[in-house]
Length: 127
Image 1 (cartoon, rainbow, N blue to C red):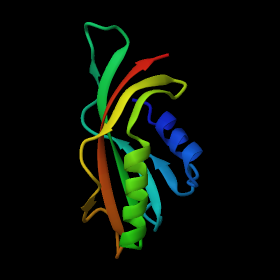
Image 2 (image 1 turned 45 degrees about the vertical axis):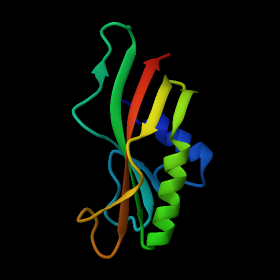
Image 3 (image 1 turned 90 degrees about the horizontal axis):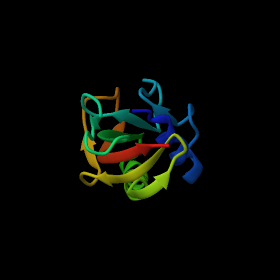
Image 4 (image 1 turned 45 degrees about the horizontal axis):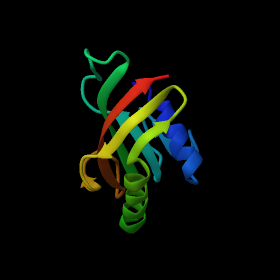
């Protein structure tokens, strides 16, 4: 699944900038604040009854030095990426739904940085 349309959408709707504090697939270890969008699982399911429809999952990770700032950003993205019929250019999002509220994850970053994760269910059709 191409995640760049999702990060482009996030960049358009927030003050985040691709490659500075918004990342796709990997976040630099030295980034003390930022948002990472990655795929979750082994790929997207193909709908064999409706040609061109795919279902998958993606994960958004928010990193910050401050728990309150990380939580605020995570909930902003939690709400923003709850989408229905959103045209992202390469594909149309049929739905993008969070699977849970933002949760702290540990052991992924060095030092005293906070990371919160949100996993999303995602269904889309190619344009």
